[in-house]
Image (tube, rainbow, N blue to C red):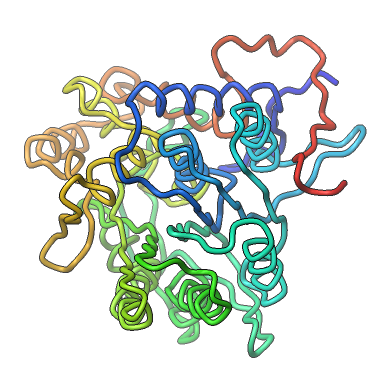
Length: 400
């Protein structure tokens, strides 16, 4: 079928398998161009492996360190006449390329919050790998059914205390406007958001993996977070999501105690603002990212997810001396180039000046749009979107 993008708000309802394959190939080529990661991981579990930072983590481990990888995700499979999700096509592309390179790669599709998927994953690791030496936790979901209580929790994106008004942009139309977001009113909104996006599930995974004996001596685990500039604090870091991120970061201490007898370590990596399915849903953030991209591209410091994660692995997690550089709060920071004083000063100046009329001139809204569609396999260079595409692409290790 001929597949074209269809959008509803910040969601693209269609995905293109050929574009996904080319995007994955592009990430692989970048990682290979940077050379082997010395002392890198060899057996890796990525929880949330199908898009964004999770996909880039899997690619970096495999093609930067020749690692065997197990990926866990929750995506809609493709079938005859029906498209799969972007993450499904990404995972199919990754496995295809990994297998052709002689690398072990298997995937599990299902609710990563559930005990059943944890058990399936542990059984696969025991059978094929024995143990893993790196666990990447990169789940992004708006809902979670708690595996112990059965309660369904939904996250919300709200400020705490006061309503928040600032500029935002409709990145499809380029219209800049003010948006006001009402604060939390339901007292359950904060704990529900923490239940979905905090550190409890990461802890459950690590506890189950350890109990099953599938964590290697010296194992490392990393989860991803974001801080950002003060202008986004009310809706992000000081809002409901920020409470969840605080919980995620606090989980590091718990996991370090859990992994002590394995000489293991846990980390939270604070990453750069990037175009992802999650960030596109947050008011204010798309405009901030559009301005940030303009500034960082001009300075030659712009990174996408694959550049961020390759740098995280090569320059932070697997340094030659074995030391992982941390900030005063014990976090890895690969948002350092984003948060540089000169970068933030320029973004702040542009923010004050931005209007609908000058948006295309002073921001990289075109780059934002392109990256958004790239997430779903569209607007990828080298792909003819007028040609028929085979929508029924399968992930090799998952039975149809």
